[in-house]
Length: 101
Figure 1 (tube, rainbow, N blue to C red):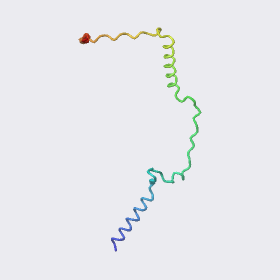
Figure 2 (figure 1 turned 90 degrees about the vertical axis):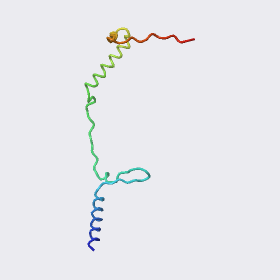
Figure 3 (figure 1 turned 90 degrees about the horizontal axis):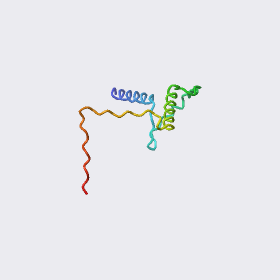
Figure 4 (figure 1 turned 180 degrees about the horizontal axis):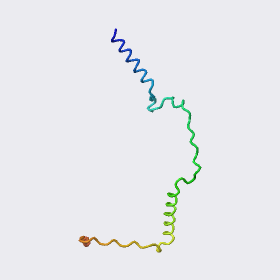
């Protein structure tokens, strides 16, 4: 008799625990939430009135765009890139070998 009471108590406890958790439903291969999310009130987040929330980032992007436009408008007017100095002790590449005919 005592064994049945313990089993019944465990069954009731597991039912309460499973019933109190939010669970998911599997239908047609999809994982769907329970309908409890419909019980909560929606949150309203007002739109931010600042049209430019990142002014420094925008200024940097516009300066890069202006530099690119100036470089395209004046292709020879920019500063020349200096050549890469040779590495001391580096072995020069081998001379090309002519292909046999």
